[in-house]
Amino acid sequence: MISELLSSAVAGALRSLGVDDVPAGVTMERPANPDHGDWSTNAALVCQKIVGKNPRQFGQELLDALQADTPQYVVKMEIAGPGFVNFFLDNSYLQSILKQVVDAGQDGFGQLNIGEGKRVNVEFVSANPTGPIHAGGGRWGAYGDSLARIMTRCGYETHREYYINDRGVQTQIFGQSLTARKTGEEIPENGYAGQYIVDWAAEMPDDVDPIEWGIERSLEDARETLESMQVHFDTWSSEKALVEAGLMEQTMVDLRESGYVYDEDEATWLRTSDFGDDQDRVLIKSDGEPTYFLPDIAYHRDKYDRGDLLIDVLGADHHGYVPRMRAALQILGYKPEQYEAVIGQNVKLMRDGAEVKLSKRTGTMIEIRELVDEVGPDVARLAYLLQSVDTPQTIDIDVLKANAAENPVFYVQYANARIHSLNRTAMERELTRVPLGEVDVSVLNDERELAVLKELSRFDEVVAAACANRAPHQVTTWARELARVFHGFYHHNKILAEDVDPAVAQARWWLAEATGVGLAVALDLLGVRAPERM
Image 1 (cartoon, helix red, strand yellow):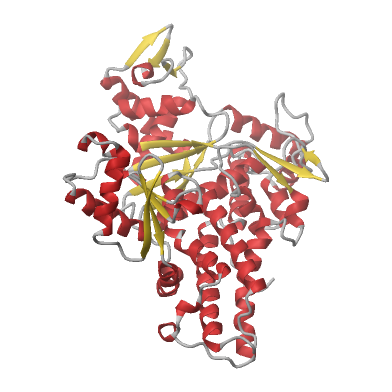
Image 2 (cartoon, one colour):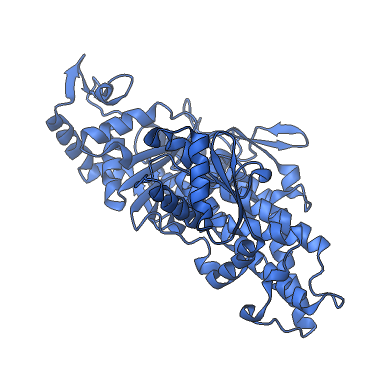
């Protein structure tokens, strides 16, 4: 990457000025204002105390050292502000990106080795198996699966997991609700209602355990709906099976041996406040029954068999859960950095300018299936990934159903379809694409051509940032921007027209091909198809 080349040049210049090791905090970043260059480093500001000089003065010395051996592709360097060194690149750098993208192809473009094979377990959705998954769960599904795809692209060994809370009061009430509908009796107090209970009760055989059958029916519905959105899991982990295997009891024994368990008020407590929690937590209630916290600790401990780093994707009401779980895992000997949690926010659906609040099937909440049925799985999935998962989201169904530029999903997919249409046109006209090695890419100097190349040049950085920040929406933003600049290029720059210079036509054709690679990889990371026709 060009950032690495420039960083290496800066490190060499610093060494020539007596700074042998580049200190932490030195960055190489793209300036927000294009007038400030293509890249900028804060090295002079960070090193001012080391060298004992004014950062502007040291910045000039750094600039002089860099100019003595100007890095490849750099046409100008300058001092800005209190001591930033800005780099301006020649178009030849962007033109070189074309070959890099085509050579890498869909298998290699954006393929990084940040994770170096580290095992990561991502648990997400994990809705109670007592009915269909609500629309918010769809957001967790799209997010969790895309995060796993991105981390895999970055060199992690990633495992996707769904936790089934298949024991406890709610599953009992769920079974009772199914039985009541089956037999025509009254649904129990706080029972489950909605058309889906009526439908599932009608399906339920007479000779089955209603709880076990209902849980499996709920999971079948979850699998079917999530898989329609290309969301897949490597493990569906049962709480009931975990408890029956003795893992909860063994975890209780080990917690007691840690010295952080105590008995008070006829309950058993874990001293999580010693590890950053705001209070200690109950493990076993006064009636002898475990709280949900104890099997959850056992479950997280079990997950370390499938990952060295655990990432939980949790709902908006789970803020207090994170410090207590991190504390419990530290008590069991795990490092704080081995556990992360992402707190997602709720989704609001709009139709005809009004919020959609009630489901036809559940009578209480909108489920994923209804959104998928209405707008399609690709549209639903990418819609969930338009913004950061930690911000509340409003999805306008009317916009998503429109095949227009206002529909962000259509806009991106249409860019990919245009590229394939271009290739079909070339085939119909029996045009031959010259091997890229024989093409003069230096003819790509139009601002719209360079804009496409600039976006392609950013992809590795975007994928790395999306991985580090646990932020798949950054890939969505990049794909939308690539689609935008490509549509502009396609509209204003003739590609295969007869009056276009053959050398220019070939270069532009390959630019479209490289764009197709970028779009296909980005859409795959987002779990969305890259259609060839629309």
